[in-house]
Image (tube, rainbow, N blue to C red; front, side, top):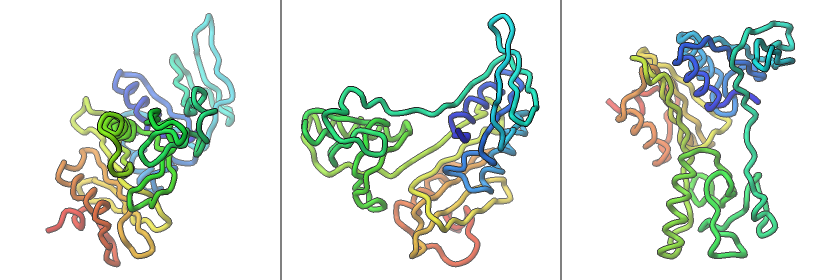
Length: 265
């Protein structure tokens, strides 16, 4: 599959252990499911500064070895990459086998109610990657979603625990949040965070400090998604300021926007 943040985290860890790392990616750029082309370029550049090399638009054709040990990977282009370790990212499928006969499936997961229990079993809850839930957050208006990230796993588990022990209150509302932290053992760690959703209209920016980011806007130019990151990373206050734009649905002025717009004077 195309490189996700998890593959990049594995690559960063291996590089941190002193290995020479080559990342083979069938997509033309890094993490196209979320990153804009400009952000993909920035992220890849940080990894390359730590010695990681990329082969984008490539796929493995053969893994070779001797005496039960891998020795090389041959790409479809014919290039041979020497290798002692191969980490393969195949993606994941939610395991719905246990309850798929008890509830409908949606978006690859078990469909649950706005309180995360099965429609037919009020005392059975599904949380994390396996649940497809109607998201009552204003950005989504009850649309059914399934989110594959540790933050949603934590939030949905906490909500289900409260609903099971105290009774349901408000419907489950979740603002998607994705993040990654790599090269934390160095003086210039790379940290990025994203909140909200992506749209057709997106504005990229890069600060002189090296901090980069993007704002996704709805037709009324309200900020409905935002990403910010860098190596060195933004401060906690800067991360909070960017998140606030999404939480409040701030209307973006016409023109180039950067981190200073989020942070204020």
